[in-house]
Amino acid sequence: MKTLADALTVRTKIYQAFEAAEASEDPQERAQWLTFALVGGGPTGVELTGQIREIAGHTLDREFRAVDPGQARVLVFEGSDGVLGAFGPVLSRRVEAPPLATALARATGAEQDRAGRIRVEPDLTIAGHPEVRVVGDLMSLDKLPGLAEVAMQSGAYAGRRIRHSIEGRTRTPRPFRYLDLGSAAYISRGKAVVKMGRFHASGLIGWLIWLFIHIVFLTGFRSRIGALISWAVVFAPGSRRERAFTPTVPDSAAAQAVPVRTAG
Ligand SMILES: Cc1cc2nc3c(=O)[nH]c(=O)nc-3n(C[C@H](O)[C@H](O)[C@H](O)COP(=O)(O)OP(=O)(O)OC[C@H]3O[C@@H](n4cnc5c(N)ncnc54)[C@H](O)[C@@H]3O)c2cc1C
Image (cartoon, rainbow, N blue to C red; front, side, top):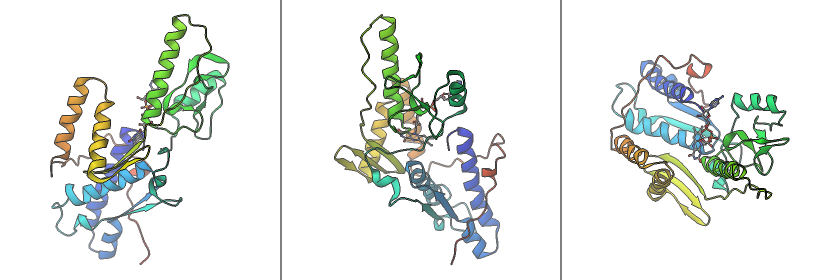
Protein backbone atom coordinates (compact mmCIF):
# COMPACT_ATOMS: atom_id res chain seq x y z
CA MET A 1 0.00 0.00 0.00
CA LYS A 2 1.76 3.11 -1.21
CA THR A 3 -0.64 5.51 -2.84
CA LEU A 4 -3.95 7.13 -1.87
CA ALA A 5 -5.66 5.00 -4.55
CA ASP A 6 -4.21 1.85 -2.90
CA ALA A 7 -5.55 2.97 0.49
CA LEU A 8 -9.03 3.70 -0.94
CA THR A 9 -9.03 0.31 -2.66
CA VAL A 10 -8.17 -1.47 0.59
CA ARG A 11 -10.82 0.52 2.49
CA THR A 12 -13.48 -0.33 -0.12
CA LYS A 13 -12.52 -3.99 0.09
CA ILE A 14 -12.80 -4.00 3.89
CA TYR A 15 -16.23 -2.33 3.93
CA GLN A 16 -17.48 -4.58 1.13
CA ALA A 17 -16.56 -7.63 3.20
CA PHE A 18 -18.82 -6.42 6.07
CA GLU A 19 -21.63 -5.69 3.58
CA ALA A 20 -21.23 -9.17 2.03
CA ALA A 21 -21.36 -10.75 5.51
CA GLU A 22 -24.60 -8.89 6.24
CA ALA A 23 -26.12 -9.97 2.91
CA SER A 24 -25.20 -13.63 3.35
CA GLU A 25 -27.61 -16.05 5.00
CA ASP A 26 -25.08 -18.82 5.45
CA PRO A 27 -23.38 -18.55 8.89
CA GLN A 28 -20.19 -20.16 7.60
CA GLU A 29 -19.94 -17.74 4.70
CA ARG A 30 -20.62 -14.84 7.07
CA ALA A 31 -17.74 -15.96 9.29
CA GLN A 32 -15.53 -16.15 6.21
CA TRP A 33 -16.41 -12.59 5.17
CA LEU A 34 -15.68 -11.42 8.71
CA THR A 35 -12.20 -12.96 8.67
CA PHE A 36 -9.42 -10.72 7.40
CA ALA A 37 -6.00 -12.13 6.52
CA LEU A 38 -2.96 -9.88 6.49
CA VAL A 39 0.31 -11.14 5.11
CA GLY A 40 3.28 -9.46 6.78
CA GLY A 41 3.53 -8.42 10.43
CA GLY A 42 5.68 -5.34 9.83
CA PRO A 43 4.58 -1.85 10.88
CA THR A 44 2.13 -1.46 7.98
CA GLY A 45 0.56 -4.88 8.64
CA VAL A 46 0.25 -4.15 12.36
CA GLU A 47 -1.22 -0.69 11.71
CA LEU A 48 -3.73 -2.16 9.24
CA THR A 49 -4.68 -4.86 11.75
CA GLY A 50 -5.40 -2.18 14.36
CA GLN A 51 -7.41 -0.16 11.85
CA ILE A 52 -9.60 -3.13 10.84
CA ARG A 53 -10.26 -3.90 14.51
CA GLU A 54 -11.11 -0.23 15.05
CA ILE A 55 -13.50 -0.16 12.08
CA ALA A 56 -15.13 -3.38 13.31
CA GLY A 57 -15.36 -2.34 16.96
CA HIS A 58 -16.07 1.41 16.69
CA THR A 59 -16.94 2.65 13.23
CA LEU A 60 -19.41 -0.10 12.32
CA ASP A 61 -20.49 -1.13 15.82
CA ARG A 62 -24.20 -0.45 15.36
CA GLU A 63 -24.51 -0.46 11.59
CA PHE A 64 -25.74 -3.98 10.79
CA ARG A 65 -28.72 -6.10 11.78
CA ALA A 66 -27.64 -9.64 10.99
CA VAL A 67 -23.97 -9.54 11.85
CA ASP A 68 -21.96 -8.15 14.75
CA PRO A 69 -18.91 -6.44 13.16
CA GLY A 70 -17.15 -6.73 16.53
CA GLN A 71 -16.89 -10.48 15.87
CA ALA A 72 -14.54 -9.85 12.93
CA ARG A 73 -11.23 -11.73 13.16
CA VAL A 74 -7.96 -10.39 11.84
CA LEU A 75 -5.26 -12.97 11.16
CA VAL A 76 -1.68 -11.78 10.68
CA PHE A 77 0.72 -14.10 8.85
CA GLU A 78 4.39 -13.37 9.52
CA GLY A 79 7.30 -15.50 8.38
CA SER A 80 9.75 -14.44 11.10
CA ASP A 81 9.57 -15.11 14.84
CA GLY A 82 7.34 -12.21 15.75
CA VAL A 83 5.42 -9.21 14.48
CA LEU A 84 7.10 -5.81 14.13
CA GLY A 85 10.41 -7.64 13.56
CA ALA A 86 10.59 -7.97 17.37
CA PHE A 87 10.69 -4.13 17.22
CA GLY A 88 14.40 -4.45 16.52
CA PRO A 89 17.05 -1.80 16.00
CA VAL A 90 15.35 -0.27 13.02
CA LEU A 91 11.76 -0.84 12.03
CA SER A 92 11.99 -1.71 8.40
CA ARG A 93 9.21 -0.95 5.99
CA ARG A 94 9.62 -2.82 2.78
CA VAL A 95 10.10 -0.27 0.06
CA GLU A 96 9.29 -0.73 -3.57
CA ALA A 97 10.86 1.93 -5.73
CA PRO A 98 8.55 3.98 -7.97
CA PRO A 99 8.89 4.10 -11.81
CA LEU A 100 11.03 7.22 -11.37
CA ALA A 101 13.86 4.97 -10.11
CA THR A 102 13.89 2.91 -13.30
CA ALA A 103 13.83 6.05 -15.44
CA LEU A 104 16.72 7.51 -13.44
CA ALA A 105 18.69 4.27 -13.65
CA ARG A 106 18.21 4.17 -17.42
CA ALA A 107 19.28 7.79 -17.86
CA THR A 108 22.38 7.57 -15.64
CA GLY A 109 23.36 3.90 -15.83
CA ALA A 110 22.95 3.69 -12.04
CA GLU A 111 22.73 0.28 -10.38
CA GLN A 112 19.44 -0.74 -8.76
CA ASP A 113 18.96 -3.06 -5.77
CA ARG A 114 16.43 -5.91 -5.69
CA ALA A 115 13.64 -3.51 -4.75
CA GLY A 116 14.54 -1.25 -7.67
CA ARG A 117 16.10 1.45 -5.50
CA ILE A 118 19.12 3.35 -6.80
CA ARG A 119 22.47 2.36 -5.29
CA VAL A 120 24.24 5.52 -4.18
CA GLU A 121 27.74 6.50 -3.06
CA PRO A 122 28.33 7.40 0.62
CA ASP A 123 27.69 11.07 -0.28
CA LEU A 124 24.33 10.07 -1.85
CA THR A 125 25.45 10.78 -5.42
CA ILE A 126 25.21 8.28 -8.26
CA ALA A 127 28.57 6.74 -9.25
CA GLY A 128 29.95 8.78 -12.14
CA HIS A 129 27.31 11.46 -11.65
CA PRO A 130 28.39 13.78 -8.82
CA GLU A 131 25.68 16.22 -9.94
CA VAL A 132 22.85 13.76 -9.15
CA ARG A 133 21.84 13.04 -5.54
CA VAL A 134 19.27 10.45 -4.57
CA VAL A 135 17.52 10.53 -1.18
CA GLY A 136 14.72 8.86 0.77
CA ASP A 137 12.84 5.81 -0.45
CA LEU A 138 14.53 6.03 -3.84
CA MET A 139 18.07 5.49 -2.53
CA SER A 140 19.74 2.24 -1.59
CA LEU A 141 22.57 2.64 0.93
CA ASP A 142 23.75 0.41 3.79
CA LYS A 143 20.38 -1.42 3.87
CA LEU A 144 18.71 1.68 5.35
CA PRO A 145 14.95 1.16 5.68
CA GLY A 146 12.21 3.11 3.93
CA LEU A 147 11.36 5.42 6.79
CA ALA A 148 10.43 9.07 6.95
CA GLU A 149 13.39 9.73 9.25
CA VAL A 150 15.82 8.31 6.67
CA ALA A 151 14.19 10.49 3.99
CA MET A 152 14.40 13.62 6.17
CA GLN A 153 18.02 13.11 7.20
CA SER A 154 19.19 12.19 3.68
CA GLY A 155 17.27 15.17 2.24
CA ALA A 156 18.89 17.53 4.76
CA TYR A 157 22.33 16.06 3.99
CA ALA A 158 21.84 16.44 0.22
CA GLY A 159 20.65 20.03 0.75
CA ARG A 160 23.79 20.84 2.76
CA ARG A 161 26.00 19.26 0.11
CA ILE A 162 24.37 21.34 -2.65
CA ARG A 163 24.81 24.53 -0.57
CA HIS A 164 28.48 23.71 0.05
CA SER A 165 29.14 23.15 -3.65
CA ILE A 166 27.43 26.47 -4.50
CA GLU A 167 29.59 28.16 -1.85
CA GLY A 168 32.61 26.65 -3.60
CA ARG A 169 33.83 24.50 -0.70
CA THR A 170 36.42 22.05 -1.96
CA ARG A 171 36.95 19.80 1.07
CA THR A 172 36.01 16.14 0.56
CA PRO A 173 32.52 15.79 2.05
CA ARG A 174 31.88 13.60 5.07
CA PRO A 175 29.80 10.56 4.10
CA PHE A 176 26.11 10.47 4.98
CA ARG A 177 25.51 8.91 8.40
CA TYR A 178 22.02 7.93 9.47
CA LEU A 179 21.26 8.65 13.11
CA ASP A 180 18.63 6.19 14.34
CA LEU A 181 16.37 8.25 16.60
CA GLY A 182 14.10 5.29 17.33
CA SER A 183 10.95 3.77 15.94
CA ALA A 184 7.26 4.27 16.47
CA ALA A 185 4.34 2.24 15.18
CA TYR A 186 0.68 3.22 15.51
CA ILE A 187 -1.63 0.31 16.32
CA SER A 188 -5.05 1.84 16.91
CA ARG A 189 -6.73 4.71 18.74
CA GLY A 190 -4.90 5.08 22.05
CA LYS A 191 -2.33 2.39 21.28
CA ALA A 192 1.15 2.63 19.77
CA VAL A 193 4.59 1.23 20.41
CA VAL A 194 7.68 3.40 20.63
CA LYS A 195 11.34 2.49 20.98
CA MET A 196 14.07 5.07 21.45
CA GLY A 197 17.38 3.54 22.45
CA ARG A 198 16.70 1.66 25.67
CA PHE A 199 13.40 3.42 26.19
CA HIS A 200 10.29 1.45 25.25
CA ALA A 201 6.69 2.57 25.59
CA SER A 202 3.41 1.05 24.51
CA GLY A 203 -0.33 1.53 24.96
CA LEU A 204 -1.59 5.04 25.76
CA ILE A 205 1.85 6.43 26.66
CA GLY A 206 3.25 5.07 23.39
CA TRP A 207 0.34 6.66 21.51
CA LEU A 208 0.83 10.08 23.14
CA ILE A 209 4.54 9.97 22.27
CA TRP A 210 3.64 8.88 18.71
CA LEU A 211 1.30 11.90 18.37
CA PHE A 212 3.94 14.25 19.81
CA ILE A 213 6.67 12.97 17.46
CA HIS A 214 4.44 13.45 14.42
CA ILE A 215 3.50 16.99 15.43
CA VAL A 216 7.13 17.97 16.13
CA PHE A 217 8.30 16.83 12.70
CA LEU A 218 5.57 18.63 10.75
CA THR A 219 6.77 21.75 8.99
CA GLY A 220 5.22 25.05 10.05
CA PHE A 221 2.79 26.16 12.70
CA ARG A 222 -0.20 25.98 10.33
CA SER A 223 0.27 22.31 9.48
CA ARG A 224 0.75 21.47 13.16
CA ILE A 225 -2.51 23.18 14.15
CA GLY A 226 -4.24 21.61 11.10
CA ALA A 227 -3.05 18.14 12.13
CA LEU A 228 -4.16 18.67 15.74
CA ILE A 229 -7.65 19.73 14.63
CA SER A 230 -8.00 16.76 12.22
CA TRP A 231 -6.84 14.35 14.92
CA ALA A 232 -9.28 15.84 17.43
CA VAL A 233 -12.11 15.22 14.95
CA VAL A 234 -10.93 11.70 14.06
CA PHE A 235 -10.06 10.52 17.57
CA ALA A 236 -13.06 12.02 19.40
CA PRO A 237 -15.05 9.01 20.61
CA GLY A 238 -17.35 7.61 17.97
CA SER A 239 -16.75 10.42 15.50
CA ARG A 240 -14.96 8.36 12.86
CA ARG A 241 -17.89 7.68 10.60
CA GLU A 242 -16.47 7.97 7.12
CA ARG A 243 -17.25 5.13 4.73
CA ALA A 244 -17.37 6.69 1.29
CA PHE A 245 -16.76 4.44 -1.70
CA THR A 246 -15.56 6.80 -4.39
CA PRO A 247 -15.91 6.07 -8.13
CA THR A 248 -12.24 7.01 -8.67
CA VAL A 249 -11.09 3.82 -6.94
CA PRO A 250 -9.37 1.77 -9.64
CA ASP A 251 -11.07 -1.45 -10.62
CA SER A 252 -7.98 -3.44 -9.64
CA ALA A 253 -7.76 -7.09 -8.67
CA ALA A 254 -7.32 -5.89 -5.07
CA ALA A 255 -10.76 -4.26 -5.16
CA GLN A 256 -12.51 -7.57 -5.78
CA ALA A 257 -13.08 -8.79 -2.24
CA VAL A 258 -13.14 -12.52 -1.54
CA PRO A 259 -14.05 -14.21 1.74
CA VAL A 260 -11.28 -15.85 3.77
CA ARG A 261 -11.77 -19.61 4.12
CA THR A 262 -10.15 -20.99 7.23
CA ALA A 263 -10.09 -24.59 8.37
CA GLY A 264 -12.46 -25.46 11.20
C1 LIG B 1 1.33 3.07 4.38
C2 LIG B 1 2.67 3.66 4.80
C3 LIG B 1 2.86 3.99 6.12
C4 LIG B 1 4.08 4.54 6.52
N1 LIG B 1 4.27 4.88 7.83
C5 LIG B 1 5.46 5.35 8.23
C6 LIG B 1 5.69 5.65 9.61
O1 LIG B 1 4.81 5.50 10.48
N2 LIG B 1 6.91 6.11 9.97
C7 LIG B 1 7.92 6.29 9.05
O2 LIG B 1 9.01 6.73 9.42
N3 LIG B 1 7.72 6.01 7.74
C8 LIG B 1 6.53 5.54 7.32
N4 LIG B 1 6.33 5.23 6.00
C9 LIG B 1 7.45 5.42 5.06
C10 LIG B 1 7.55 6.91 4.67
O3 LIG B 1 6.30 7.37 4.22
C11 LIG B 1 8.58 7.04 3.56
O4 LIG B 1 9.80 6.45 3.97
C12 LIG B 1 8.83 8.49 3.22
O5 LIG B 1 7.63 9.14 2.83
C13 LIG B 1 9.85 8.58 2.07
O6 LIG B 1 9.96 9.92 1.67
P1 LIG B 1 10.41 10.27 0.22
O7 LIG B 1 10.46 11.76 0.15
O8 LIG B 1 11.63 9.50 -0.14
O9 LIG B 1 9.27 9.69 -0.74
P2 LIG B 1 7.74 10.09 -0.81
O10 LIG B 1 7.23 10.58 0.50
O11 LIG B 1 7.08 8.91 -1.46
O12 LIG B 1 7.74 11.35 -1.80
C14 LIG B 1 8.07 11.21 -3.16
C15 LIG B 1 7.25 12.23 -3.93
O13 LIG B 1 7.71 12.25 -5.27
C16 LIG B 1 6.59 12.30 -6.13
N5 LIG B 1 6.99 11.72 -7.43
C17 LIG B 1 7.16 10.42 -7.76
N6 LIG B 1 7.52 10.32 -9.05
C18 LIG B 1 7.61 11.59 -9.54
C19 LIG B 1 7.93 12.13 -10.79
N7 LIG B 1 8.25 11.37 -11.84
N8 LIG B 1 7.92 13.48 -10.93
C20 LIG B 1 7.59 14.26 -9.86
N9 LIG B 1 7.26 13.80 -8.66
C21 LIG B 1 7.26 12.48 -8.49
C22 LIG B 1 5.54 11.46 -5.41
O14 LIG B 1 4.25 11.80 -5.86
C23 LIG B 1 5.77 11.89 -3.97
O15 LIG B 1 5.04 13.02 -3.61
C24 LIG B 1 5.11 4.72 5.56
C25 LIG B 1 4.89 4.40 4.23
C26 LIG B 1 3.68 3.86 3.85
C27 LIG B 1 3.47 3.51 2.40
